Length: 72
Image 1 (cartoon, rainbow, N blue to C red):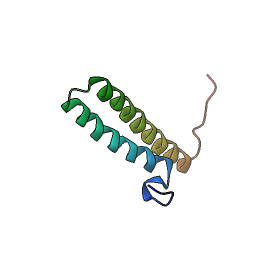
Image 2 (cartoon, rainbow, N blue to C red):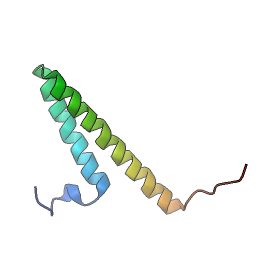
Image 3 (cartoon, rainbow, N blue to C red):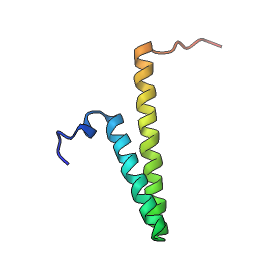
Image 4 (tube, rainbow, N blue to C red):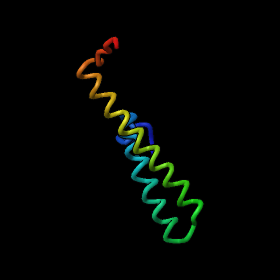
């Protein structure tokens, strides 16, 4: 990989790429009964997926403007 790799243009894109790779590797590990590796890769997948989701939500919120906070 290089710095010019399209998968690294944004945090969201990098996280999505990492999620895809880690999911594929987790499946490979599970098929070969590498339980700890499978678990760790699934955790990496979950974190990358959640990061991509947060980045998407942050971007959407930025386009709409910050939500107003009302006093109770």
